[in-house]
Length: 459
Image (tube, rainbow, N blue to C red; front, top):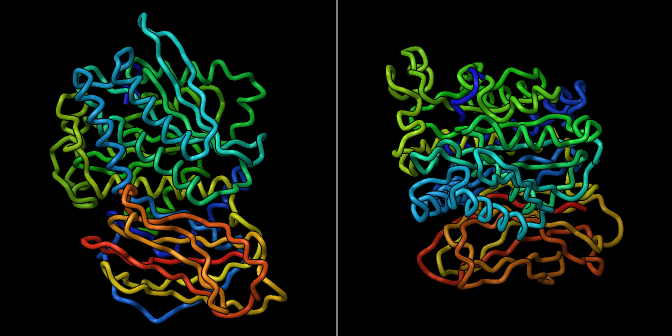
């Protein structure tokens, strides 16, 4: 967060609440032209099978954003800073390396990316813009964060945290194969610490017709403060309500954000007449006794004692705040872009946890499909959410009612990421639609455990 301009738990919300909140948020957003947690114990005990049938439009829950993934991005940003004189500041090689890291992730995930150059203080700066294919190009929902640090430190909370949360949300869009009603765009801004230079350049160089297409801009600057508060921007009532309702569903109280008014990139959009919103966990201001009672932490201490200092490293992050806020980013992006399912039709889901034995026998999770006529579609969508500490160990198959197996994922010794959260497309047109379909998962190597969190078929 800039100081150069004037004052401007890991908890997974229950699916049932998410559906209600997303529906409410969509309705609220429509009125204004905006429509709308490390995994638990890795070997969760199995529950009785449960099949949920619902219209696809009611099943478009935002995914849980894996905290491990967000922190992995922070680790990379820290490594970049360490290799480049300890910072990622504008005009320094660590900033350009940060842009390159984020861009590579987005390019691999299928985004259309562009790097915008500008000049500030005699040095070249860079903004990174990433567009997700599809959605109404005349209605754009945008989320962003500044990627630069100050020269005195690595800037991991300010603002690696917001940058990583936005990045992992964008990657979740790709994993879900999301098809939102509105167009989705993400941005990472340069030279924010010098006075919002990058975001001002972006907004000022947008033709007025293009500015008018941005239905709302969401800003995330410092979302993992070590002594955190939970602050929500109050600039736009509809966007504000999406965030406040989400945290209410988690049982987390929020307050209106005031410390960062005009001091982060949302101001560039707001000054151009674009509706804005966002989240913040506090900077140099002191947490009051009342706030400590509400949120925990230490009264009489700054929300971030390392704000703009050399100690703003990966040790300067509160995991619970980072996790909650990253999940809230995804919730807002899903709700405000008014997505339905990735494929119209009827959804059949099993949300019961099923343990996957370490280097053991395959397990299955059933879904009972009823009420269909004829065969399954040629583009049957199987959305899988498997929590696992080493996804490369897993072999995942979809079993048709007659036992025919469709390979969704093979094991791979080089796939060192955790979790399998993806949507696969299967040509199942030769299979009868009705019957018991199963997700089969086997862990074929030792030392890593996990469980099937949920999965669903969209016909």
